[in-house]
Length: 232
Image (cartoon, rainbow, N blue to C red):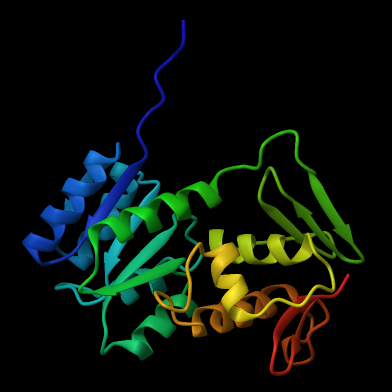
């Protein structure tokens, strides 16, 4: 007897009822279980009770902002997609710095949001068992199925997107990738829909977590005028 697979659970947090209704409708249509919330100060309790697989989180919320939630849960392991207004670029960057995996600007296409949800969830899944299990370098180890990283034998907590970026580059050592290429391969997006600064922010976060001296990176180096590469 084959047990039915539980639908992924999405927590949608936005104080605009129309936005919540449309987003929830499209997500349910795509097979997700959805819970809606309209206040930022209730997110942590909802996460503990609902245990979502992903959070769609507006930045501007009554009670507490989406950024406040990210600040209070610096080590959270639930992927987060931020909803932002186009005028909130500093907040978008700060959200990425605080651990958000992706963002989408208002007004947005519900189909694009569902596609982003699908992509973030897919990349957060364990690697298939027949792929290479471990990438081992001098002082750096990536366990791909477990999505774990060790630096000098010590575990390092990465967000889903940070791990995706590191693993993608580590699988192609010394190959230079532009920001546009990284957006395409890691975010399944392009500069038409995503700010290339997203890559810059994630690289900076990664360096702060895995590099002994982030200002003089050992693993992820900058190729000026081109992009980044992983040094084995």
